[in-house]
Length: 270
Image (tube, rainbow, N blue to C red; front, side, top):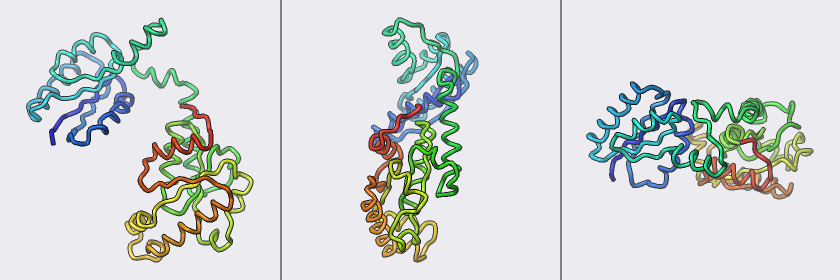
C-alpha cells in the first residue's frame, strides 16, 4: 500500500477544501495521512506550507496531494511552485463556472458563508431543532418537523437526523420505538397526526446486537434474541402504518439522508 500525505490548504477555515477530501475514499489502496492548514492567507504561511509539503514528499517517497481553496491568485501561484499534485477548487470549479456565467467570481475567505446568508442560518436553526427533538425528548413544536425518523434504539436515528439538519437544513425529529409501543401494537400517539412526515430506519439484528453490546454488554436489551424480536415488531408496526423504511446496517448517513430526502420529497436549504 503506497503512502501519500494530503494537505488541505485554505485561506479560511478549510471546510470547503475538506469536503473535497471525500474524493480520497475512491482510492482505498492508498494510505493517506491528512494535514490541514487553514487560514494560510499570507506569503509567509505559504512558505511554511511549502516546507511541510517538501518534508512530506521526502518522508513518503511520493509527492503529496494538495487540495486547496485559495482565492488570492498570488498565494495560489506561489504554493504551486511546490512539487505536488494539486486539486485547486478555483481553477477546477470556480473559474470555469465564472467563464460560463460571464461573471467574475468572489474570491475572499469565508465567501461560502456570506453567500449562503439565510440558508446558513436556516441550517443552524434546523440543528437546534433536531438536537431539541432527539430521541423523543419533547413533543413541543413537533408540527414544525419536516421529517420524523423512527426505529428501534441504536439503529442510527440520531446521526442521520443531525446530518439532515447540518447539511440540508431539514428540521428532523426522531423517536425510538420502545417496548411499550410493541405491547400496545401501535406507534406513539403523538405521531399519529404526522404520518406523512415519518420515515423509518431498521437494522440487521446481528449488527444491532453488536452495537448495543458495546453500550450494555450482557444485558437483555443487547441480547440477540431481543434484538430480533424488537426489529421484527418495529417493522410490523411501520408496515401496518404504511411507513417507508430503509436498512441502516451498511449505509452511511449520507446514503440514508439521500434516500430519506428522495422518499419524502423534502426540499433542502443547502
